[in-house]
Structure formats: structure tokens, C-alpha cells
Image (cartoon, rainbow, N blue to C red; front, top):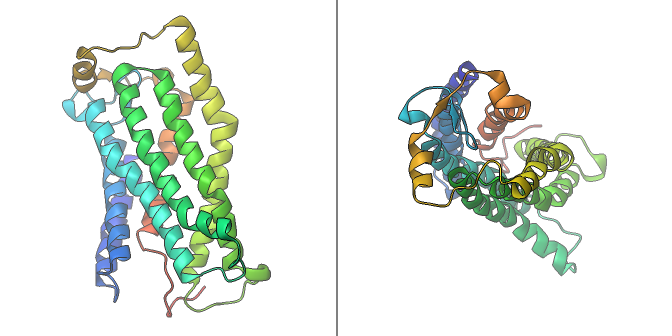
Length: 281
């Protein structure tokens, strides 16, 4: 993962420079996308080196740089950037490829306008529960965090489907100058939403989070921390482990996807999908 993220970071820096040199490189949308992509990629590089598992505060290195609190602080920036990349790209799609056949459908037009913001809101709220879970060791808070992630992407899934249909009206696959990046984005986005939502609903939430959260509420194991020492412990304690059994399949799967597929998606999105006359499919 470290080597993959080194390569991704090099590509990110090149894309960042290229984006700044584009004719519209200083526009607000392109600037936001460029910096959010850079933020996500740099945090992914850091977290690929200093691996951490919040609940047990496992870390790869015995150093304060592997502190779960420090890593969670970086995660605030990275995860909001990731949500922002997707949401802003969807909002830009709505602007560049407007729908013309539901002028009388107020609810549909309002949904298209606000669904991307619902994603950002869900991911923003999730950060509080993730941080609280890290400090208190409450599995319930982690379960709520992951549920908010699932709800966020479920909220934009219908819009993702609408946009891919709009990008290829009537199954049209012929070249349409200017829509190349937006068409590619619509396909990638709907695929991502379908995969993530399916994974969350079938495996991630019921098996990894809610089952264990309910078990903790019933047994009280591990105990939930509520005093000020919980914050200090979360910051300073790093339980070094290089044993697969400590990390588990679920973590390895999540970690591998987070720092590969998600980074590659961010690299694509930081190019700011938009209508450009010179684009070709």
C-alpha cells in the first residue's frame, strides 16, 4: 500500500499542477476540486504508512505519529474532501447537463439540487461519531458513523442513476464533444454508489458494526470510557501490532480499498469533471 500511495501522490502532484495551468484553472469549482483531491491523497499517503485501528488503538509503529487521535484529525479533512469531490462533481453535472423534461416536477428538481449536499451533511455528521467512538471505545458510535456513510451514498444513488441516463440518452454511445469527462464520471459514480451501498447493507453494517455494537451494549465488553483520561489515552496509547489476527479481514479489506480505489477515484475527480468543448469520449 505504501508503494501504491507513493505512486498516487506523484500522480496527484502532476494533476494538481496541470489543473492550475488549465484555461479555467482558477475558477472556484476547479480550485476546490484540485485542493480536495490533494488533501485526500496526502492523508492517504500518511495513513498508508501509519496504519491505525481505532477501537483497539493498534498501530504499525510505536510513535506519536501513529496516534489514533492525530490520524482521526487528518481523517476529518480527507473524508470531507472525498465527499466534497463527489458532491461537487454531481452538482457540476446538473449544471452542465441540465434535465429538460421534468420542469413541472418540483420534487425531482429539488432532489437533484439537494442530494449532493445530503451526502456532505451525512459525512460531516459521521466525523463526530467516529471521533466519539475512538475516544469512548463505543461500538455504537462507530455503527452510527458507518450508517451515516451508507445513508449518504444511498441518498445520491438515484441521482447517480439519473445522471448516467442523462449522459447516455436513449442508450446513445456516439461521441458528444465536451461531455467526455462527465460521461466517464457518471459511469464511475453510479458503479461506486452501487458497490458501496451493496457492501454496506449486506456485509459491512449488519456483520461488522451493528452486531458487535449490540453485543457490547449487552455485555459491556469492551467497557465504554467516559472520563477525561479517555481523551489522553486515545492520544498517547499506541498498541503496536504486526499480527494479521489483530487487524482482521474486514479491516484489511477496508484499508486496501480505501488507500487504493478511493485514492484513484479522488485522482480522477480532482481533474474537475465538467463540460469542455475540446473533450472527446
